[in-house]
Image (cartoon, rainbow over all chains, first blue to last red; front, side):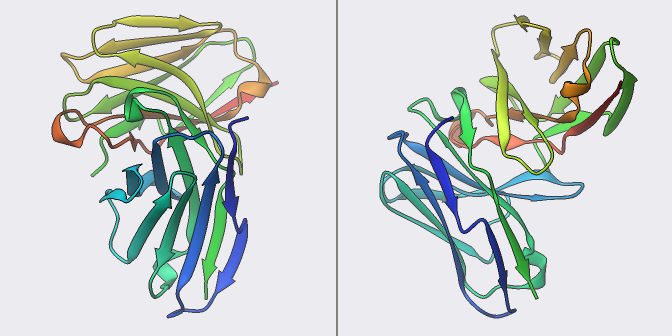
Length: 114
Length: 113
């Protein structure tokens, strides 16, 4: 399995609080992605990174921010969590060819906003 | 709206039968990938087909790509109960958005023993 770890694996938080999810990789891959998965919607891209300090928005970026200060870590922050952000969040990584090569996924973080 | 849309949303077949899933997309692409997800787990890559390829095989998997129709199909032959999972297609978006990897909503496959 590719060395990709998401933390925490489960979190319950209250509406209005900030939340940070971490994705850590040991593969030295250039590209990192954050997705959310909801029933009926498949995986939707939130933000992605194509290098250290190089990030861009995906399809559903409102209410989320990201940071990548080093190759191995990609952080996803919910600035003020809302119930609509209750979801399963997946991190993925891929090599220098980005979307033109295989992506490897973490095990997911189940976030519940109450 | 999503780049890739799978069809059907759900499929139930008997073990030993073939399963065919389809994916349609909207913009030009450089490649298309198929992934599998077992319940509660992360996605696992199955196969990648480039825009200049029409067909690709990997074990019991056969993928076709028709860029003129902006569609792809995934065929699983001689299905097994262990093939029960959700299957997703994913594409880049070509052009200036080529860094993005966009997934469809998936097909849930149930293979009955």
